Length: 553
Image 1 (cartoon, rainbow, N blue to C red):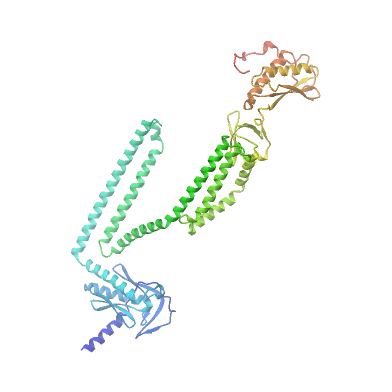
Image 2: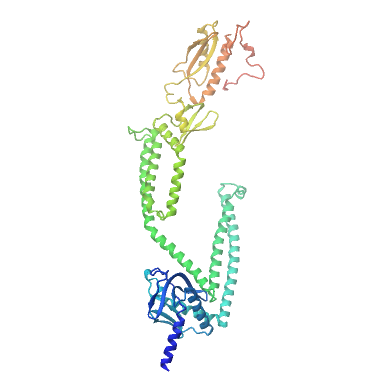
């Protein structure tokens, strides 16, 4: 009888060989179609994989053909065996023992799954014993859950716990919604009170602005994060209450744990690099502060080195600071977390291409700005003419130069345009006296000495014209019908050229009319019968009126 039982056990085990479970990587050690003998069991690796799934848990993945049965057929046979064991509520003991060169997993001394060595990836460091132990642990857990699923009392208790969790989650979501509304209203009231107390702005303006909307959006975002956390935790808890959905709940919890662990490890691994970047930034800031302190002393005139001028100190300081920070970025780049990833490198290449293709005009303006600065062609505060634009220089930028005209218009001229055009600076030698000219044309019948005296008298009566150097008159040209006289004067303020010349021209007209000297512009073909002058009595013809004392002409 003992011999008969032994033979029966061997035959049963041979049948169970059709089912298997082993959670290992793909077999790549043997070529497909090359069978090998392990005792009396023929096995060969295949390209197919078939997981043995029981109660929504993957017990093992089969990859070998055993006794002519492929992985799919073996997995299906193993599943049917496990379903039968679960129906009989057989869950203990679960163990494995060597059998014909493989491992036979048994449940209550009944064969369930057979693992061959071809199901194990030995190159990945797996062994048949380790795979069998893992299969035993997973099968023991799955069979226990199968018995639990067939116990009404346990399922009722799990359903009650799941229902209570859902009720608590709904109440928590309602509480978060109420708290969000109360917090948003409270923050709005606090903001309005703060603004009203400080007097920075009107409360009505604050309500019309987007500031309160930002506060509400911030509260909404925080509430959404809390709601998501509540829903996620509740779903995972409910799924873990029931045997069939428990693997899903465990995977959700494992995902959170793995994510937190990865973030923590990533942050810990990034700490040395971040510390190095911080040291580089602090060192660069210290050097930039030293450079700024030295160049500001030059700007204020406290230091006077021979190789740099006060007007070029500021742009030189900016240039050196820019070079320092560029060098710091290059040095710190390898220590930035993620700088060695393909995504980071791809973004760097993309930005480099953008700068390369779009920097031709940019570099032209930058180099033109350097030329303007270090040639000392312009200074902030100078009154200049660039092309057709006259104004006071308010800014010498890296890319452009800004002028403030006498009409209070701010004109931006690109540096490349400034370099390409003729620039006239009226303020550079203003202390020595920059001459400003104005011309009239007078007929040959007028004594030239009288004309010169009238022009000099007009300059003397005009406010805003210097007495030193003295104004003077030159006969610029002897034309066909008249003589061109040019009056040259020095102005007190070059930025008031327009208004000073207006007063000078008014004085010239009054004096020439008073002394009966005709101004020969525009051209004429013959001498008129009477001089073309304005009688003194008509100087203030309606609607004109005499100027009050202190008014401009």
